[in-house]
Image (cartoon, rainbow, N blue to C red):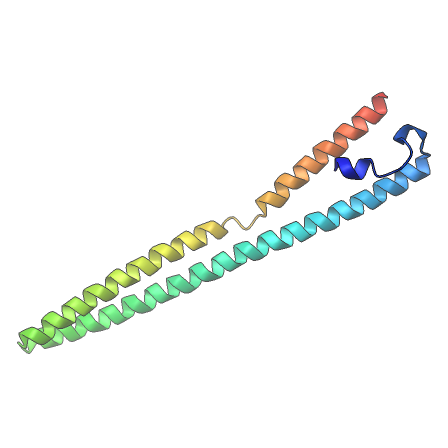
Length: 143
């Protein structure tokens, strides 16, 4: 913001009100465009993390469903008293449930990175801009 305030060749005190208003209008316009671009980039990043998280949650659910199917098959094979087959089915079911748990944990982490959807970096930047402009107006009024 400091670079923008001093982009005229003449000192601010020597500029006319019309020049100052024109500069302020240009600066505010540029500031709003830059802040909107920052917000758009930040929201896109959060949306990407949310999409990955939801996809991984879905993958975890699919693995859990497969694990349940294998457990059912293990129960059927266990009842049939084919010990090597049902033991193998239990091992596969356990592996699928572990994989489902890992997918769910990674997915949860991705969703947490996306929430809240508020573009916090942009909000912080806007607050700083408002403080800078308010300070400049206050200083100008006292001088």
